Image: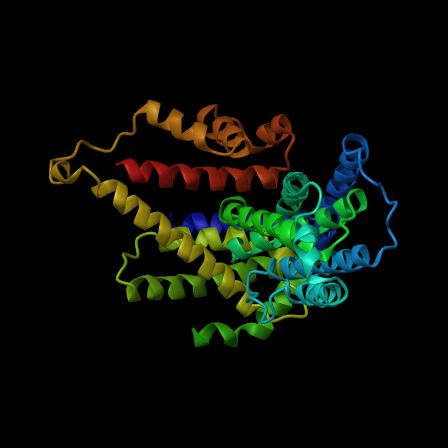
Length: 218
Length: 185
Protein backbone atom coordinates (compact mmCIF):
# COMPACT_ATOMS: atom_id res chain seq x y z
CA UNK A 1 0.00 0.00 0.00
CA UNK A 2 1.13 3.52 -0.66
CA UNK A 3 1.09 6.78 1.22
CA UNK A 4 -1.35 8.12 -1.39
CA UNK A 5 -3.85 5.39 -0.64
CA UNK A 6 -3.48 6.24 3.05
CA UNK A 7 -4.39 9.82 2.16
CA UNK A 8 -7.49 8.58 0.39
CA UNK A 9 -8.39 6.34 3.30
CA UNK A 10 -8.11 9.25 5.75
CA UNK A 11 -10.33 11.35 3.50
CA UNK A 12 -13.01 8.68 3.48
CA UNK A 13 -12.87 8.10 7.24
CA UNK A 14 -13.08 11.84 7.92
CA UNK A 15 -16.09 12.16 5.64
CA UNK A 16 -17.76 9.38 7.59
CA UNK A 17 -17.16 11.14 10.89
CA UNK A 18 -18.57 14.34 9.43
CA UNK A 19 -21.71 12.51 8.41
CA UNK A 20 -22.27 10.56 11.62
CA UNK A 21 -25.03 11.69 13.92
CA UNK A 22 -24.32 9.82 17.11
CA UNK A 23 -21.40 10.42 19.39
CA UNK A 24 -19.30 7.28 19.77
CA UNK A 25 -19.24 6.13 23.37
CA UNK A 26 -17.91 3.20 25.33
CA UNK A 27 -21.35 2.92 26.88
CA UNK A 28 -22.55 1.30 23.68
CA UNK A 29 -20.52 -1.81 24.48
CA UNK A 30 -21.95 -1.98 27.99
CA UNK A 31 -25.44 -1.56 26.61
CA UNK A 32 -24.86 -4.34 24.12
CA UNK A 33 -23.58 -6.65 26.86
CA UNK A 34 -26.59 -5.89 29.04
CA UNK A 35 -28.91 -6.59 26.12
CA UNK A 36 -27.16 -9.83 25.17
CA UNK A 37 -27.13 -11.13 28.73
CA UNK A 38 -30.78 -10.27 29.39
CA UNK A 39 -32.02 -11.84 26.17
CA UNK A 40 -30.00 -15.02 26.64
CA UNK A 41 -30.99 -15.17 30.31
CA UNK A 42 -34.63 -14.98 29.33
CA UNK A 43 -34.04 -17.79 26.86
CA UNK A 44 -32.41 -19.95 29.53
CA UNK A 45 -35.23 -19.17 31.93
CA UNK A 46 -37.75 -20.18 29.29
CA UNK A 47 -35.93 -23.46 28.68
CA UNK A 48 -35.81 -24.12 32.41
CA UNK A 49 -39.51 -23.44 32.84
CA UNK A 50 -40.62 -25.54 29.88
CA UNK A 51 -38.15 -28.43 29.65
CA UNK A 52 -36.94 -28.82 33.22
CA UNK A 53 -40.32 -29.33 34.83
CA UNK A 54 -39.36 -32.04 37.31
CA UNK A 55 -37.70 -29.69 39.76
CA UNK A 56 -38.78 -27.67 42.71
CA UNK A 57 -39.24 -24.38 40.85
CA UNK A 58 -38.59 -21.51 43.18
CA UNK A 59 -40.04 -23.59 45.99
CA UNK A 60 -36.97 -23.66 48.19
CA UNK A 61 -35.93 -20.09 47.57
CA UNK A 62 -35.50 -19.13 51.18
CA UNK A 63 -33.00 -21.73 52.20
CA UNK A 64 -29.66 -20.45 53.39
CA UNK A 65 -27.58 -22.70 51.11
CA UNK A 66 -29.45 -21.34 48.11
CA UNK A 67 -28.86 -17.78 49.22
CA UNK A 68 -25.14 -18.41 49.63
CA UNK A 69 -24.91 -20.10 46.22
CA UNK A 70 -26.90 -17.28 44.65
CA UNK A 71 -24.63 -14.73 46.29
CA UNK A 72 -21.51 -16.49 45.02
CA UNK A 73 -22.77 -16.97 41.45
CA UNK A 74 -24.08 -13.43 41.13
CA UNK A 75 -20.89 -12.02 42.64
CA UNK A 76 -18.94 -13.92 40.00
CA UNK A 77 -21.21 -12.84 37.16
CA UNK A 78 -21.12 -9.16 38.09
CA UNK A 79 -17.36 -9.10 38.68
CA UNK A 80 -16.77 -10.92 35.39
CA UNK A 81 -18.97 -8.55 33.39
CA UNK A 82 -17.30 -5.48 34.91
CA UNK A 83 -13.86 -6.90 34.15
CA UNK A 84 -14.85 -7.93 30.61
CA UNK A 85 -16.11 -4.41 29.93
CA UNK A 86 -12.93 -2.89 31.31
CA UNK A 87 -10.89 -5.18 29.04
CA UNK A 88 -12.86 -3.95 26.03
CA UNK A 89 -10.69 -0.87 26.03
CA UNK A 90 -7.55 -1.73 24.07
CA UNK A 91 -5.13 -0.13 26.50
CA UNK A 92 -6.58 -1.90 29.55
CA UNK A 93 -4.25 -4.18 31.42
CA UNK A 94 -5.39 -7.11 33.48
CA UNK A 95 -6.75 -6.24 36.89
CA UNK A 96 -4.76 -7.19 39.96
CA UNK A 97 -7.55 -9.10 41.69
CA UNK A 98 -8.92 -12.19 39.94
CA UNK A 99 -12.66 -11.82 39.42
CA UNK A 100 -13.54 -15.08 41.11
CA UNK A 101 -12.08 -14.05 44.49
CA UNK A 102 -15.24 -12.50 46.00
CA UNK A 103 -17.36 -15.45 44.85
CA UNK A 104 -14.82 -17.92 46.20
CA UNK A 105 -14.80 -16.16 49.58
CA UNK A 106 -18.60 -16.29 49.81
CA UNK A 107 -18.65 -19.95 48.87
CA UNK A 108 -15.75 -20.86 51.17
CA UNK A 109 -17.40 -19.16 54.15
CA UNK A 110 -20.66 -20.96 53.40
CA UNK A 111 -18.90 -24.29 53.11
CA UNK A 112 -17.02 -23.72 56.35
CA UNK A 113 -20.35 -23.07 58.06
CA UNK A 114 -21.89 -26.18 56.54
CA UNK A 115 -18.98 -28.39 57.54
CA UNK A 116 -19.21 -27.04 61.07
CA UNK A 117 -22.93 -27.78 61.33
CA UNK A 118 -23.17 -31.14 59.58
CA UNK A 119 -21.62 -34.37 60.96
CA UNK A 120 -18.65 -35.68 59.06
CA UNK A 121 -20.43 -38.90 58.08
CA UNK A 122 -22.88 -36.98 55.88
CA UNK A 123 -20.34 -34.93 53.96
CA UNK A 124 -19.84 -37.34 51.10
CA UNK A 125 -23.53 -37.99 50.54
CA UNK A 126 -24.18 -34.24 50.49
CA UNK A 127 -21.43 -33.68 47.98
CA UNK A 128 -22.68 -36.33 45.54
CA UNK A 129 -26.32 -35.30 45.90
CA UNK A 130 -29.20 -36.58 43.81
CA UNK A 131 -28.44 -36.15 40.11
CA UNK A 132 -24.95 -34.71 39.90
CA UNK A 133 -24.13 -35.45 36.28
CA UNK A 134 -27.42 -34.06 34.99
CA UNK A 135 -26.82 -30.90 36.98
CA UNK A 136 -23.27 -30.55 35.72
CA UNK A 137 -24.24 -31.05 32.10
CA UNK A 138 -27.33 -28.84 32.32
CA UNK A 139 -25.43 -25.91 33.77
CA UNK A 140 -22.79 -26.28 31.08
CA UNK A 141 -25.26 -26.62 28.21
CA UNK A 142 -27.52 -23.81 29.42
CA UNK A 143 -24.50 -21.51 29.70
CA UNK A 144 -23.83 -21.75 25.99
CA UNK A 145 -26.43 -19.23 24.80
CA UNK A 146 -25.30 -16.75 27.44
CA UNK A 147 -21.67 -17.26 26.43
CA UNK A 148 -22.57 -16.72 22.79
CA UNK A 149 -24.42 -13.52 23.67
CA UNK A 150 -21.61 -12.20 25.84
CA UNK A 151 -19.00 -12.89 23.16
CA UNK A 152 -21.17 -11.22 20.55
CA UNK A 153 -21.43 -8.13 22.73
CA UNK A 154 -17.70 -8.02 23.47
CA UNK A 155 -16.95 -8.02 19.75
CA UNK A 156 -18.11 -4.41 19.76
CA UNK A 157 -15.19 -3.54 22.02
CA UNK A 158 -11.50 -3.65 21.24
CA UNK A 159 -10.11 -6.36 23.50
CA UNK A 160 -6.37 -6.87 23.22
CA UNK A 161 -6.38 -9.84 25.60
CA UNK A 162 -8.97 -11.95 23.78
CA UNK A 163 -8.24 -15.15 25.67
CA UNK A 164 -8.83 -13.43 28.98
CA UNK A 165 -11.90 -11.60 27.69
CA UNK A 166 -13.30 -14.92 26.45
CA UNK A 167 -12.72 -16.55 29.82
CA UNK A 168 -14.50 -13.64 31.52
CA UNK A 169 -17.43 -14.04 29.14
CA UNK A 170 -17.49 -17.72 30.16
CA UNK A 171 -17.49 -16.87 33.87
CA UNK A 172 -20.26 -14.36 33.31
CA UNK A 173 -22.27 -16.99 31.42
CA UNK A 174 -21.56 -19.71 33.97
CA UNK A 175 -22.38 -17.46 36.92
CA UNK A 176 -25.69 -16.31 35.48
CA UNK A 177 -26.70 -19.80 34.43
CA UNK A 178 -25.72 -21.41 37.74
CA UNK A 179 -27.81 -18.80 39.56
CA UNK A 180 -30.82 -19.55 37.33
CA UNK A 181 -30.33 -23.27 37.66
CA UNK A 182 -30.47 -22.96 41.44
CA UNK A 183 -34.05 -21.85 41.06
CA UNK A 184 -34.80 -25.10 39.29
CA UNK A 185 -32.66 -27.36 41.41
CA UNK A 186 -31.83 -25.78 44.76
CA UNK A 187 -29.05 -28.03 45.98
CA UNK A 188 -29.31 -28.86 49.64
CA UNK A 189 -25.62 -28.50 50.11
CA UNK A 190 -22.84 -26.11 49.22
CA UNK A 191 -20.56 -29.10 48.91
CA UNK A 192 -22.75 -30.11 46.01
CA UNK A 193 -22.36 -26.66 44.46
CA UNK A 194 -18.61 -26.91 44.86
CA UNK A 195 -18.42 -30.42 43.40
CA UNK A 196 -20.70 -29.92 40.36
CA UNK A 197 -21.45 -26.29 39.62
CA UNK A 198 -17.88 -25.09 39.95
CA UNK A 199 -16.48 -27.64 37.43
CA UNK A 200 -19.25 -26.75 34.97
CA UNK A 201 -18.27 -23.13 35.44
CA UNK A 202 -14.60 -23.85 34.88
CA UNK A 203 -15.48 -25.74 31.73
CA UNK A 204 -17.51 -22.89 30.28
CA UNK A 205 -14.78 -20.38 31.25
CA UNK A 206 -12.26 -22.62 29.49
CA UNK A 207 -14.47 -22.76 26.41
CA UNK A 208 -14.72 -18.98 26.44
CA UNK A 209 -10.94 -18.70 26.71
CA UNK A 210 -10.51 -21.09 23.79
CA UNK A 211 -13.01 -19.19 21.63
CA UNK A 212 -11.79 -15.71 22.57
CA UNK A 213 -8.80 -15.40 20.22
CA UNK A 214 -10.94 -16.48 17.26
CA UNK A 215 -14.21 -14.75 18.03
CA UNK A 216 -12.85 -11.51 19.47
CA UNK A 217 -10.46 -10.68 16.62
CA UNK A 218 -10.60 -7.18 15.19
CA UNK B 1 8.11 6.36 21.53
CA UNK B 2 8.55 9.42 23.75
CA UNK B 3 7.47 11.56 20.83
CA UNK B 4 3.95 10.24 20.77
CA UNK B 5 3.12 11.49 24.25
CA UNK B 6 4.01 15.07 23.24
CA UNK B 7 0.84 15.02 21.17
CA UNK B 8 -1.43 13.96 24.01
CA UNK B 9 -3.25 17.26 24.58
CA UNK B 10 -3.68 18.21 20.94
CA UNK B 11 -4.72 14.73 19.81
CA UNK B 12 -7.18 14.22 22.65
CA UNK B 13 -8.77 17.60 21.86
CA UNK B 14 -8.97 16.74 18.16
CA UNK B 15 -10.54 13.35 18.91
CA UNK B 16 -13.12 14.97 21.18
CA UNK B 17 -13.99 17.33 18.37
CA UNK B 18 -14.14 14.41 15.92
CA UNK B 19 -16.52 12.60 18.25
CA UNK B 20 -18.81 15.59 17.91
CA UNK B 21 -18.71 15.36 14.12
CA UNK B 22 -15.84 17.68 13.22
CA UNK B 23 -14.41 16.10 10.05
CA UNK B 24 -11.54 18.60 9.73
CA UNK B 25 -10.20 17.87 13.21
CA UNK B 26 -10.43 14.16 12.49
CA UNK B 27 -8.69 14.54 9.14
CA UNK B 28 -5.83 16.46 10.70
CA UNK B 29 -5.63 14.04 13.63
CA UNK B 30 -5.45 10.98 11.39
CA UNK B 31 -2.75 12.59 9.28
CA UNK B 32 -0.63 13.29 12.34
CA UNK B 33 -1.28 9.87 13.84
CA UNK B 34 -0.45 8.19 10.51
CA UNK B 35 2.82 10.12 10.25
CA UNK B 36 3.78 9.19 13.80
CA UNK B 37 2.79 5.54 13.37
CA UNK B 38 4.76 5.31 10.14
CA UNK B 39 7.91 6.21 12.07
CA UNK B 40 7.16 4.10 15.12
CA UNK B 41 6.18 1.04 13.11
CA UNK B 42 9.21 1.23 10.85
CA UNK B 43 11.47 1.55 13.88
CA UNK B 44 9.77 -1.35 15.58
CA UNK B 45 10.00 -3.63 12.54
CA UNK B 46 13.63 -2.69 11.98
CA UNK B 47 14.47 -3.32 15.62
CA UNK B 48 13.08 -6.84 15.28
CA UNK B 49 15.04 -7.44 12.13
CA UNK B 50 11.95 -7.47 9.95
CA UNK B 51 11.56 -5.84 6.58
CA UNK B 52 9.73 -2.53 6.45
CA UNK B 53 7.95 -3.13 3.16
CA UNK B 54 4.47 -3.33 4.62
CA UNK B 55 4.68 -0.51 7.16
CA UNK B 56 2.06 1.43 5.23
CA UNK B 57 -0.33 -1.54 5.46
CA UNK B 58 0.03 -1.54 9.23
CA UNK B 59 -0.55 2.22 9.32
CA UNK B 60 -3.75 1.81 7.31
CA UNK B 61 -4.94 -1.08 9.45
CA UNK B 62 -4.32 1.09 12.53
CA UNK B 63 -6.28 3.99 11.03
CA UNK B 64 -9.21 1.74 10.20
CA UNK B 65 -9.10 0.20 13.68
CA UNK B 66 -8.94 3.65 15.28
CA UNK B 67 -11.97 4.60 13.22
CA UNK B 68 -14.05 1.47 13.83
CA UNK B 69 -13.18 1.29 17.53
CA UNK B 70 -13.23 4.98 18.34
CA UNK B 71 -16.08 4.47 20.78
CA UNK B 72 -13.69 2.49 23.02
CA UNK B 73 -11.72 5.64 23.78
CA UNK B 74 -13.03 7.17 26.98
CA UNK B 75 -12.81 10.95 26.63
CA UNK B 76 -11.66 11.24 30.23
CA UNK B 77 -8.70 8.97 29.66
CA UNK B 78 -5.39 9.65 27.90
CA UNK B 79 -5.56 9.27 24.13
CA UNK B 80 -1.97 8.28 23.28
CA UNK B 81 -1.94 5.03 25.31
CA UNK B 82 -5.18 4.08 23.55
CA UNK B 83 -3.67 4.68 20.10
CA UNK B 84 -0.49 2.92 21.11
CA UNK B 85 -2.41 -0.15 22.29
CA UNK B 86 -4.26 -0.34 18.98
CA UNK B 87 -1.04 0.09 17.02
CA UNK B 88 0.67 -2.58 19.10
CA UNK B 89 -2.24 -4.96 18.54
CA UNK B 90 -2.14 -4.43 14.79
CA UNK B 91 1.63 -4.71 14.62
CA UNK B 92 1.59 -8.03 16.46
CA UNK B 93 -1.15 -9.19 14.13
CA UNK B 94 0.95 -8.33 11.10
CA UNK B 95 4.03 -10.03 12.51
CA UNK B 96 2.06 -13.20 13.15
CA UNK B 97 0.67 -13.13 9.63
CA UNK B 98 4.19 -12.70 8.30
CA UNK B 99 5.51 -15.60 10.32
CA UNK B 100 2.71 -17.76 9.04
CA UNK B 101 3.40 -16.64 5.48
CA UNK B 102 7.05 -17.47 5.88
CA UNK B 103 6.24 -20.96 7.13
CA UNK B 104 3.95 -21.58 4.20
CA UNK B 105 6.54 -20.23 1.78
CA UNK B 106 9.33 -22.44 3.02
CA UNK B 107 7.30 -25.52 3.69
CA UNK B 108 8.14 -27.92 0.88
CA UNK B 109 8.92 -25.21 -1.66
CA UNK B 110 12.60 -24.82 -0.95
CA UNK B 111 13.56 -26.30 -4.33
CA UNK B 112 11.38 -23.95 -6.28
CA UNK B 113 12.39 -20.74 -4.57
CA UNK B 114 15.45 -20.11 -6.73
CA UNK B 115 13.68 -21.03 -9.95
CA UNK B 116 13.09 -18.17 -12.40
CA UNK B 117 9.65 -16.74 -11.87
CA UNK B 118 6.94 -16.06 -14.33
CA UNK B 119 5.61 -12.53 -14.16
CA UNK B 120 3.08 -12.36 -11.35
CA UNK B 121 -0.28 -13.43 -12.51
CA UNK B 122 -2.75 -14.79 -10.02
CA UNK B 123 -4.93 -17.58 -11.38
CA UNK B 124 -8.62 -16.79 -11.39
CA UNK B 125 -9.32 -19.98 -9.50
CA UNK B 126 -7.17 -18.74 -6.62
CA UNK B 127 -9.01 -15.42 -6.55
CA UNK B 128 -12.35 -17.19 -6.49
CA UNK B 129 -11.23 -19.49 -3.71
CA UNK B 130 -9.83 -16.71 -1.52
CA UNK B 131 -12.82 -14.56 -2.23
CA UNK B 132 -14.91 -17.41 -0.87
CA UNK B 133 -12.90 -17.31 2.36
CA UNK B 134 -13.71 -13.68 3.07
CA UNK B 135 -16.51 -12.82 5.49
CA UNK B 136 -19.79 -12.58 3.50
CA UNK B 137 -20.06 -8.79 3.83
CA UNK B 138 -16.58 -8.13 2.51
CA UNK B 139 -17.02 -10.73 -0.22
CA UNK B 140 -20.19 -9.09 -1.46
CA UNK B 141 -18.60 -5.65 -1.48
CA UNK B 142 -15.37 -6.74 -3.18
CA UNK B 143 -17.32 -8.70 -5.79
CA UNK B 144 -19.60 -5.77 -6.50
CA UNK B 145 -16.89 -3.12 -6.73
CA UNK B 146 -13.81 -4.89 -8.04
CA UNK B 147 -15.26 -7.63 -10.22
CA UNK B 148 -18.61 -6.22 -11.32
CA UNK B 149 -17.32 -2.67 -11.50
CA UNK B 150 -20.19 -1.06 -9.66
CA UNK B 151 -19.93 2.32 -8.00
CA UNK B 152 -19.80 2.65 -4.24
CA UNK B 153 -23.23 4.25 -4.21
CA UNK B 154 -24.82 1.46 -6.22
CA UNK B 155 -23.18 -1.24 -4.17
CA UNK B 156 -24.24 0.49 -0.95
CA UNK B 157 -27.84 0.64 -2.08
CA UNK B 158 -27.79 -2.91 -3.39
CA UNK B 159 -26.27 -4.35 -0.21
CA UNK B 160 -28.27 -2.10 2.06
CA UNK B 161 -25.14 -0.66 3.68
CA UNK B 162 -23.92 2.89 4.19
CA UNK B 163 -21.40 4.15 1.65
CA UNK B 164 -18.83 4.45 4.42
CA UNK B 165 -19.37 0.86 5.48
CA UNK B 166 -18.95 -0.24 1.87
CA UNK B 167 -15.64 1.60 1.63
CA UNK B 168 -14.33 0.14 4.86
CA UNK B 169 -15.43 -3.37 3.84
CA UNK B 170 -13.80 -2.89 0.44
CA UNK B 171 -10.60 -1.78 2.04
CA UNK B 172 -10.50 -4.64 4.51
CA UNK B 173 -11.56 -7.20 1.93
CA UNK B 174 -8.82 -6.15 -0.47
CA UNK B 175 -6.25 -6.09 2.33
CA UNK B 176 -7.27 -9.61 3.38
CA UNK B 177 -7.18 -10.82 -0.22
CA UNK B 178 -3.76 -9.31 -0.78
CA UNK B 179 -2.52 -11.02 2.36
CA UNK B 180 -3.90 -14.40 1.28
CA UNK B 181 -2.62 -14.10 -2.25
CA UNK B 182 0.75 -12.88 -1.04
CA UNK B 183 1.13 -16.08 0.94
CA UNK B 184 0.82 -18.33 -2.07
CA UNK B 185 3.16 -16.57 -4.45
